[in-house]
Length: 293
Ligand SMILES: N[C@@H](CCC(=O)N[C@@H](CS)C(=O)NCC(=O)O)C(=O)O
Image (cartoon, rainbow, N blue to C red; front, side, top):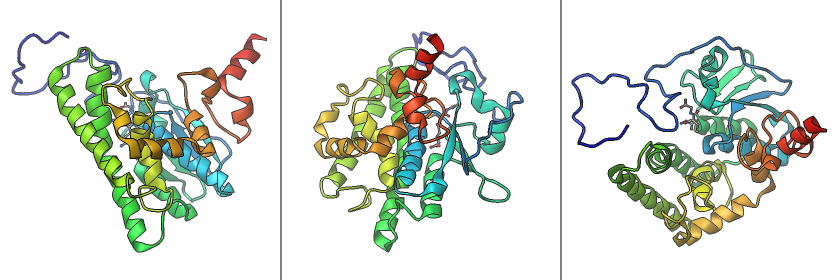
């Protein structure tokens, strides 16, 4: 779709399925299931249906951090949801998440099981359930929630705004790229100024606010999103970069990034995770080597 003249909107918007862009095939203006497909279920208390996008990684990092901290009740099965193939519109998935987006999870320790969607809600649920990675002191707890909700409200400008127009739209248009690059750089500056005088987002301790913000803004300054590090001059945010590297070095973060990953280097792809040992035996390089043997 090449746009040659300014667009005059019609009186009533109509769906043009061929509008182009990376996700043109799966985007729809209607909700609900498109096909019958029950979800698979493993043996662990938590059943996660996800993909290793930044929103997905927030939750797998939290689950791996909980397990590393000794919360054995946080064991989970992670099932791969291929959003490019429309798995998020299967009937089982939609029953858990009417919004058809990853990450989605079920807590089977409750009767009936508790459905969980929206990554911020999932992080908060897990933090409360295990009394972990969220400060209990009044001011620090409130800061943690301030930044968690900041992330949930801000990242759509980075992903759906900047990322879409810079990396995924069928053509590069200056107006939306300028508009969203400006906003993303403002957000990076907000974080950089805060982290200049705070070791972590909520103060002295690593929390769910860091996990949520790192998955998007940490990975952006680590040059992992949209091939946009140079364009956004990410190395100029020195405090943010230092914080991002510190979190990136955590073993649970390294594991969390691998879960439900179906792209990139095969040795870092653990497409499904059903046991802690899977990181050693079930990465995609090993699965493919065994298949070829
Ligand atoms: N606010 C939601 C956003 C989730 C989201 O946008 N997920 C994307 C992948 S990062 C998705 O599932 N997209 C599939 C679709 O839009 O059909 C959250 O934080 O959980």
